[in-house]
Length: 119
Image (tube, rainbow, N blue to C red; front, side):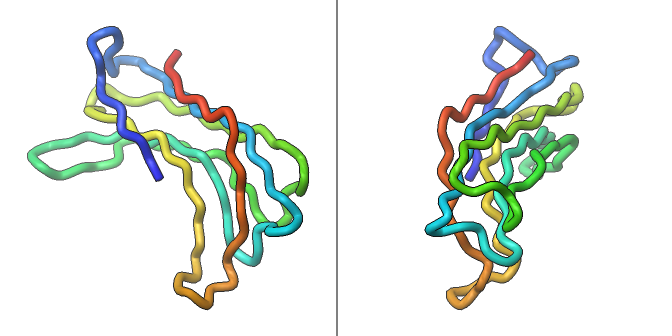
């Protein structure tokens, strides 16, 4: 899942650093299994005549099967976008490498107080 952001006149892309931050909880009743991962990210994208190219990105250290259970954990990352960036995406990612209904890569992650900003 992602949300796209465009410049709004109060800031521009030159030397702009973006951050994303949230509190995450994995309950032991549906812990992450096998290769499932959760992370937050930011993608700096250059849009040019209908094509989109990622020109910068950063993702948090992923939560995995060995991550703590039943505690709120802070997850965050930051990235500096170059001047060729035309839009930014804030990303909430649940990665399931083995796809399909019978995949053993599963689990539940609860997210609270998700914040995205610039500095």
